[in-house]
Length: 236
Length: 255
Image: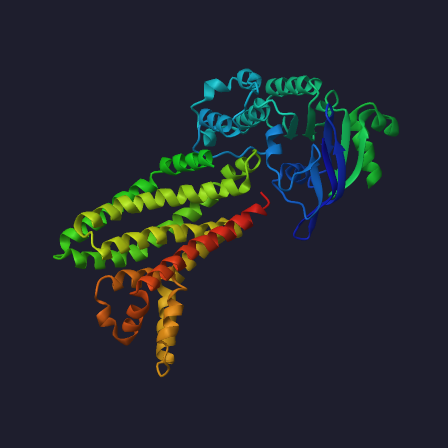
């Protein structure tokens, strides 16, 4: 579904992505893991077309994303830090997003909006929101349009345990529907029961892309956190 | 396109600066027309104020607005929208609201008191100047990442266009006073939209007679229909060129 082919991206002298090639298919739940500054967010932004690659290309359903923009209607994106227009209220933001994406014959998925009880906060301005509430808004927007692909950048960072559990259940439910889920997180323990594959990035290079079973076998560790720790230590 | 445009307009109206700008222009033009004994003189006083204030407010407001919309732009770029659409809606929204403010604040009083060809020319050039300086602001806003540097740059640009440029031209004129520079001066004026607008309005007012030989040359060129059309096209070019460059730059920007 999403294929990245030898993509490179430099920010000044820093190589954020170094010859990364990955292919992601439907029904998979892929964890993007790597130390801070390893290029995870850059990779995600490259898929979304927010960052333009220096070389290489990315295809979405076989079409190069470079001159395409409609493919983004099939993606739900939850950014690491949700930044929204300050003087808009949650309600106005929701109305605007629905208006912009104008889902034709797509059932809106308002499960998260209801479960997070955002409708009670509809009049609150975005600048007055706490980090956690902002994350709730980001998550609700990502799932709202029933997209085929979900890209979640640190989804549970800043969420309280109850909200994090709601979000995790939602991710599992969407994965079961055969959607592609890309997820980055530093809390590896919560990825255990979510992901089916792992992409490991370091210094912008793709170190491996493996099924989680294969990773467990290679490292001899049952838990993802221990398995990754083994890989990181070996890499040093 | 229309949708994003609508949301930009709503957002601009929500901060009341545009409204204050409209009221300020309105009070200014009405008081000038009521103070001067002839409304033709009123046009002249208004011209000098419009040429300073309109570019300044347009370029500063547009630049600060662009920087403050960084979040909004980031949100929109991750949605199924063309980047060109997003950027042109931004441009359209800013230009539309500032032009409306100018038309209400200066356009209506001018039409009420002095609807002569000079008055019409003042309104036209004010509208064009507004859009030109919004376009320049957009170019600066997309080229320069740092907010303080961006705003500093546009302040310098405004100083350059409204003060420095005339100084440089005067300097050249005095240094090369022995040479026939009149034709060259016509070319040089096209490099500054503010100067060009000033000449276009002044030539409609018959005081160009006081501008000496250069004034006669200007009248020869700018006074004719063709000269007028060419200068209006040059002003349009001042909109299209920075606007087009900023769209190109925004298409390749990492957000």
